[in-house]
Length: 157
Image (cartoon, rainbow, N blue to C red):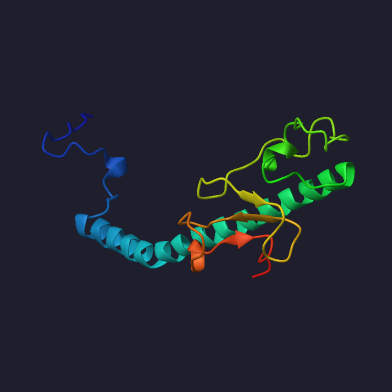
């Protein structure tokens, strides 16, 4: 028996002859559907980024508040405004600080989620012994929404 040679014009092996791929129109329809879904879903997630940054700032402030309280328990005073939050990381050169904990109270002082330093003032101006706060996304005092100041006086808002 002689085998029939494959035609040069139909090089598809017999095993693949019944299969077919996607047409250009089918692929374009899928790409358009994915684009429409992205247009609806992505803006919802972008608004959550700001909420996450605000929540992170509040968590940072609560953690630093705890470290400041531990500092006061050991030394009977809060660090002065001049000593700042760095007194939680490195032992300050001050005669007031006699029982500074070896290793410190924090490993390092974080910046706020917008890349600015947290601000610390003693005495506080909002009814607390100290004010610890971020100026928000705009880095300016005051503001609304994501630009609002986030401080130890308004963490529950």
